[in-house]
Image (tube, rainbow, N blue to C red; front, side, top):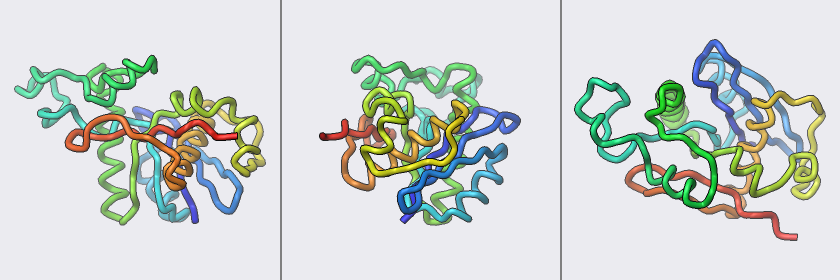
Length: 191
């Protein structure tokens, strides 16, 4: 059973990290366009894809355009409010550079879901804080990776895939609201 993580870049001109878990091995790759990402994921055929990007809009918003009437609603989802209250560093979806990432994330989620793949929103920086350093974490959860010189995008994709693994095992919690969107956080590893 395969699980995948995507560290999505805001622009297709920059690489997105892709990681997937298969029989105790962690594989990583980079892709650029949504089409490349979808093609790679369809080849991998994961049960769950964990994406590091906002995958929903604040309740009451129809878009992120500044000229739309929904702009007055604001840019914070319950996800961001709850994460900030716990001391995690996140940004509202209406920040200039977050707008592109959010729109791209929502589009990718819809594309994968229509192909029958379950998609969850994750935040690898928070997963890293909860689970600890990657090279200490992997042996604890019986995973191994051949590539040692990971880019930051690839490492974030690995944390995203591990969060999908924790989700699959039922070792997770969610923040946010069902009617607005949820983010999945791993629970700490029990010794």
